[in-house]
Length: 196
Image (tube, rainbow, N blue to C red; front, side):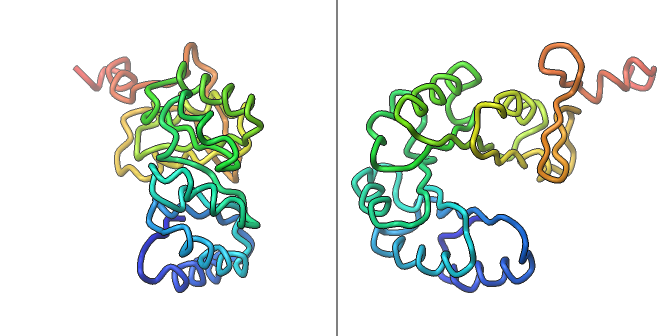
């Protein structure tokens, strides 16, 4: 869940009350100072939060290190890690990195980030932007290499033009078709004689 506003404590309390048995992960979207992050982490502990993503500004590596050294929750870098060459400077400052295909440029760079993070004994999360099932399915192919996956971007679209990976009850299912397995819905309509 996204935090970083003036009523974060109320927000987390409300979400936990409505989802008492769900795993909660918090993304502060770089909104907190290091000291405020530690105060918020004390609050998050009361609500059984699993991890905290990007608690401080992306450029504040020492702020991340300050938080990580004092936090009982894992700290995951998101905006601080765009490409694989960012990983070594984050070693010791965070517990893991969040990889996004739209952020790093694609599958090849994502694989480099994952390998570099593992070489630095970091956990790996794979996230997404609000994107179609084409992007989500591409990312889902990396699932066996991950510790955490947050691939809900296509579920936020009113009209997804692609059919691809599905996620139900926390399980990612890849399509069986060739390549990535993604199919354009318009192409299916054209084959059926509906698309011109």
